[in-house]
Image (cartoon, rainbow, N blue to C red; front, side):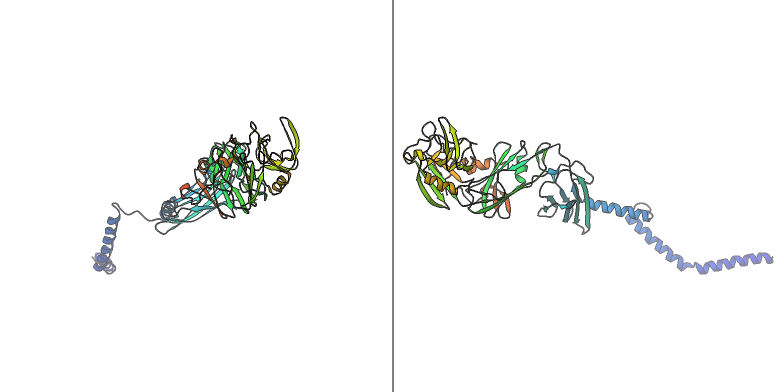
Length: 445
C-alpha cells in the first residue's frame, strides 16, 4: 500500500510540475500565434507554406536578376561568331532608360548614339571585319533597379573585298567646280549603305548631293560652285561596309584638299569670244577661234583636267607642239596658244575642236589655271558627250538628286555633313544658265 501511495505521489508531483510550466494562459498564447500564422498562409497560398532555405533564396535572386537583364537586350548576342560588321550593334531597353553603352575592340572604342527616349542605342559607323568586340550596357528599369548586361562577339572575315579610291590629292588645290570623285575596284550594289558611310566637311557651308555614275563611280557635287578659298575634308567610314553581297570594304578612306580662287571661263562658239571671270569679276573678254564646221567644239560645262607647256598634239593632218595648253576633255579639247589663228580669232572658227587663244591671253590663263576650274562652251550645234571629262556639271540640281541612292540633299558645314530632304533646302541653284548644252548647263557666277 505504501508503494502504491508513492507512485501516486510521483504522478501528482509530475502533474503539478506540468501545470506550472504549461498552464492555461500559456496554451492560449501559443494557440493565438498559431492561428495568425494559419491565416497568413491561407492568404498567400492554397497549400501549406514551403520551407524557406538558402538555396531557394539564391535561386529566386538569380531568376530576378536574369529577368531584369532580359529587359536590356544587346544584339549581336554574347558568343556570336561571323557577325556581319555592316549590321552594327543595337542595344534596347524594354523597361526603363539606357544610361550608358561602352563598346571596345582592343584599345579602340566605338561611337554611337541614343534615340530620344534613351531606350535604343546604335553604333554610328560599321564595325571592322575580323575583330572581337565587347559591349557593356547599363540601364535603370521602371522599378528603379540598375541593370547591367554584357555581350562579346567576333565579326566575320570577308571572303572578298572592295577598294575605294579618291581622285583628289592630299592638300592639293582645285578649282571651284571640282567634284569629289570616288571610284571602286568592284561594282557596288549596296549604294545607300555606302552613301551613309561618307562624310564631307567644308570650312564654308555648301549644299550638294551624291551621284552614282554606274556602279563603280560616285561623285559629290555641290549645287553651285564651291566658295573660293575653302578647305574640304572627306571621311569615308567604309571599313566593314558591305559593298555587295559577301564583298566588304576593309579600310577607311580620308582626304583633305583646298579650293582656290575662283577662275571661270565661258567660251561662245557664236560670238567667238571668251569671258574670263577671276575672283568673281570679269577679268578678260578675249577673241577666240573654236572648232570649224564638222569639228565643232561641243557645248557643256566641263572642268579643267591638266595643263602642259608645251603639249604635243597629234591628229588628222597636224602634229604640233602647243604652248600654254589647258585640257578639259578626255578626247583632247584644250584652251591653248594658237599664234597661227590670231587673224581668225574673234570672227571665224578654224580649229580642230580646241579653243584657240592668242599667245598673250593663253599665257595669262595658263598661269592661273588649276584642275577643277569650270570651262563652259556655248552656242555649238552639238552637245557634249557624257563622260568625256568630268561632265557632272551637265546635270541640273534635280537630275543630280536622282542619281543619289538615298535621294537626299547633303548639307555640309565645318563639322560634317547631314542628309536632308531636298524640300527643306533653302539655297537655290544658279538661275543664270547658259543656253546650248543639254541637259542643263550652268552659268558662271
